[in-house]
Image (tube, rainbow over all chains, first blue to last red):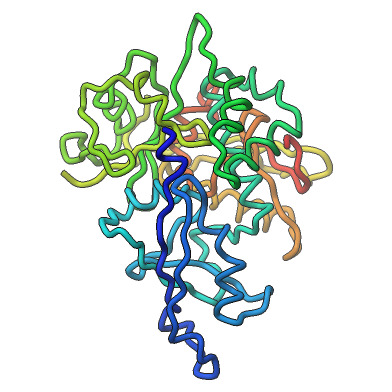
Length: 245
Length: 94
């Protein structure tokens, strides 16, 4: 857990062909930066605009091998989703209208999207009983903890949500695949396999066709979800990725 | 438990605050459709200006991400076989 919070992912950012402007000599250059695994790509927008000499009104979005990057998801999750195996993630920046499949996320919208995810997780965990006790400053502290990569600070706030109580205690889990995700209520005794079966009920996919990935590691099907809850993302969801087996 | 992906599910739209109330507020939608579809529909139905936003809430507690499939939200959050979605033109629950 501590390692995940500290891990920096180097990013190599080039301008997408469609967005290149002949009058912008910097458009042929490469911008190197980095992101924490548990942070989000919209946090890089300002420095990217600055490097490629675009004003602050210019829309920005990122793509990888031509696919729109779903940037409301944490970077570590994106690496699993797009099966990135390189040490440096080469992505393209686009300076055109943000495509309809993603939201145009300013930093304040990103923050509110994160807080909503935290609330969604707690609705599943405690029917919002615990998050309802959160004050405005608790949300602010937990967000700042991510921006400052402070696991200690995150823990001091998030523990109010995560302390298990007797009675029903559900683990918020999403299985991400391609441009969507699967989810169905899980119980505390569920394994990776049984949770996946529940999530894929009624879908056209069969659990046997997938391996389940968390931060680059394939999970054993009989692992108990409860044992994985330490590996939840900062929004307290256990975000797992399905890759074709 | 979810039905087949072809099935439709019922969604009930409820206005919050001064958001306009719709004449028809119950719909059957495809499970695979994303909640962004409902957001776009509401923007048109409530005559949102370009700079205005529409906020959707589930359980009067959280806003779903726009990539959420309606069937998945239904499986996790429906009650009485209906997914109730509150909508507002200003932030209502945080």
